[in-house]
Image 1: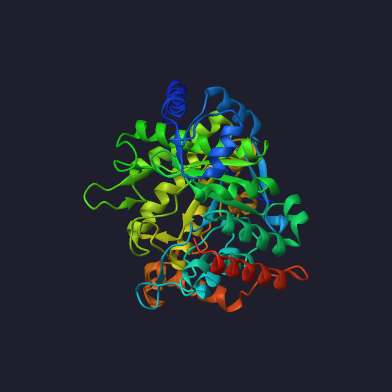
Image 2: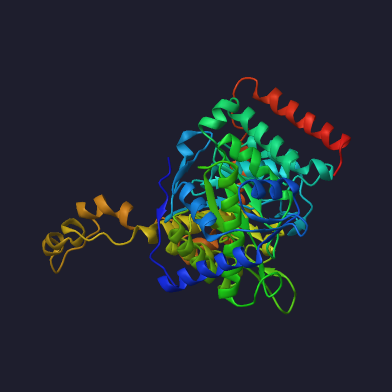
Length: 485
C-alpha cells in the first residue's frame, strides 16, 4: 500500500474566501440550476425531491440537499490496485500521481521526432511502462487505440490497460453502454463481480458540460455506484470561454458543477465513494487553445485542494500535463510547477504525467522525466527532520577543525535518507558527460523506455479472465453495431 505524500501547507485562499466561493456555488445550484440532457438523470433528481422543471429540463438543488450529499459521501476510502501493493488510501491532503489522461488523439514518436496517430500497441506499451515506474501511483491513458473503428476505441483501450497493469485505473466511459463494458471487463480482470465489489480497482471518470449542463456521458454513474466503484465528479469550464475569465468566478462555477456530480452520486447510492475533481481550465486569448501549464491553472488547483479539504473530500486535477510540444526545458518547467504546487497544496490525485501539447499527445520520454520529478518532490515533501541525531552536535565536535564527515558513520547512516539520489537525471562531471556522448536527458529517458519494453509483458490474469474479457468486448461491439447512437 502506498501512503502517498502529505501536502496541504500551501494556501492562497483565506477561510472566508473558501466559504464565499462555496456559498456562490450553492446560489448557482439553487437559483440558476443545471440543465440535464438525460431523461435518466432528470428522473433521478425528480424522484429525490429536487426542484425539477420537466419542460426546461433544469434541475435546481437546495443547500440542504447539497449538505446531505456531503454528509453521505465518504471522507476517505481506498482506491484499490488489482495488486494490493498498489492500494491508495485517499483522503484530503494525501498526494498521488498518475500517468496520462483520457484518450489523447496522438502519440509522440521519439524515432520520428514528431507526433503521429496512435495504435493499440502504443497504448499497451505506455501502460507497461506506467506499470514499471515506481513513482506512478495510478494509471490513465497516454494515447488512444487509434487504429480500431471509432465506436470501438474505448473497448480496446480498456482491454489494453486491464491486461497490462495491476495499479489502480482511473478512466472514462461515455454513457451507459461503455460503462457496462468498462465495469464488466474490470470485473473479469480481477476475478469476477464479487471481487470487484470487494476491492474496486477502477474509478469512473465522469464530467459535466460547461456551462452548468449534464448529459448522457455521466449516466455510467448508475452502474458504477451500484457496484461500489468510486466516481470522479469532474468538470472543466474554460476561463473566458465556457466560464468566467476571473479565477473567483471560474471557481464558483466549476465548484457548482462538481457539487452537482457529488450530489448525483449520493442520490444514486448513499455512501458511494466520490472524488471532487473540478478542473480550472484556461483559454489562451490569442490562440483559443486550452492551456495546460498556465500559472492561473496552478493557482486554481491550489484553491480546489483547499475547497476539497473544506468539503472533506479527496480531490483531483491536472498537474503533469504541459503545453510544450516536445520533452524539453519548457515541458520540465511547466510540469515541475504544476506537480510541486499540487503536492504543496495537498491535491489528492494529479493526472497527466507524460502528456504534451495541452493533452494532444503523450510521450513515454516525458513520462520518465515526470517520474523523476515526483522523485524530487518526494524529497521536498519529506521536509527537514530536527532531532538530536540530525542536529549532530556531537558529530560536529568529534570531527573538529581538521577532519571531514565523509568517512564518519553518521554520514553512512543518514546520507540515503537525507540526500536526493537521482535515478534518471545525471550528475557526472562535464568531461565524463562529453565522453559518453554529451546526450540530453530525453535520450537517456528513451534508453530506459527501450529497456523497460524489452522486459515488460502483460500482467497475469485470473483463470478464465482472458476469455471473459473477450466475450464482453464482442458483446459490446455487437450491441454498438445493432444499436448505433
